[in-house]
Length: 166
Image (cartoon, rainbow, N blue to C red; front, side, top):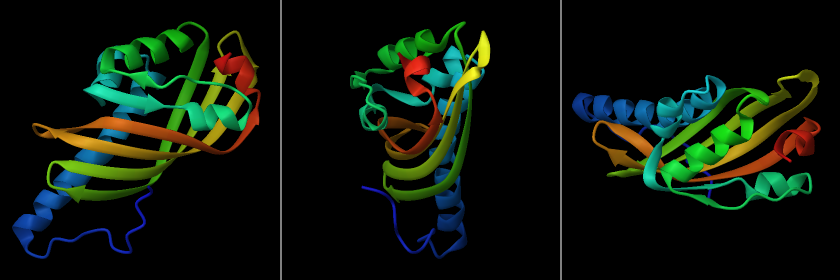
């Protein structure tokens, strides 16, 4: 499930090491595009994080506070659902930390901790601060990597997630 390897890099020669570092950076960038695309309400940036047949499972995180979230499938459905949920109603900031990456050819797995702050636009006193674990499968898409499957689990939260997410 989570990437818990006890080493970050496997390459030993300079050329392979450079390629591995490039891939690791691009893998992590997919999650940065996911977070910043939401925060800036940038549809193209957000959509660029996902493969066409991607899956986003926010259900485990929602269950933590008694909510429900359906499995979202497909880049367009994920983009439309997430951005519409917050449009004109919720301000967000996402901070991605502790990324761990394992690459196997044209597939990768990433584990990261993401702090996601959500505030009602009309009343920043109503908020939810979520500390989540992301479990992400990615695939190579040319020179970049895109998310094929993302599962989000909540570690802890403060505030009122039900007011934010419904």
